[in-house]
Length: 205
Image 1 (cartoon, helix red, strand yellow):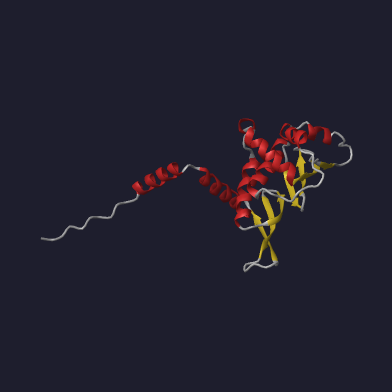
Image 2: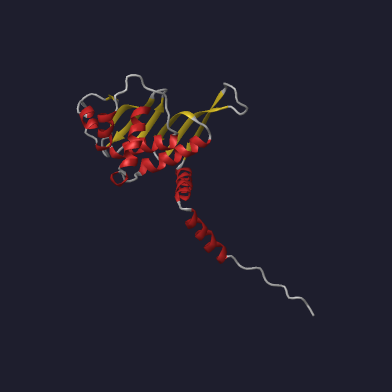
């Protein structure tokens, strides 16, 4: 079951979490005594985590992955920011992703869901593991471990600050991947028709 760590005077948080519509299915279905290692790729796993954050109106997020799941910290509110902390296991997020696939019409995309899904694709492409993401104002600080080229047991740690432009580029790439091939072909055909045609050279008699 998901564990929650709350600040003083926030005793209602576990109750609110269990009544969250996105997590209700998970709490009904998941009973894990020994939590397995992560099975899903980052793309679907972070999509589910992003949807959970969106459903809680989160901001200023901080995600730290462990061997069993994610330590999640985020803020809520505008004038006075309330800090909330939770632990979500990989198993719970995998079940949440399965539930979202079954109920697509009930789970519209949101800010974190779209971006974290796109970011997960990029981390998967680099065989990343044990990620950490920290949101500071408009920037995101990302770190993850990656196998060293050539194989073996040596890992290296990657780190990068993603500014607004970087985040937009990651999202644009994701949206382009989701377009049907026919739509992409029509786009390129229209683009090529706009290009000036080379002048024809007439042979002199």
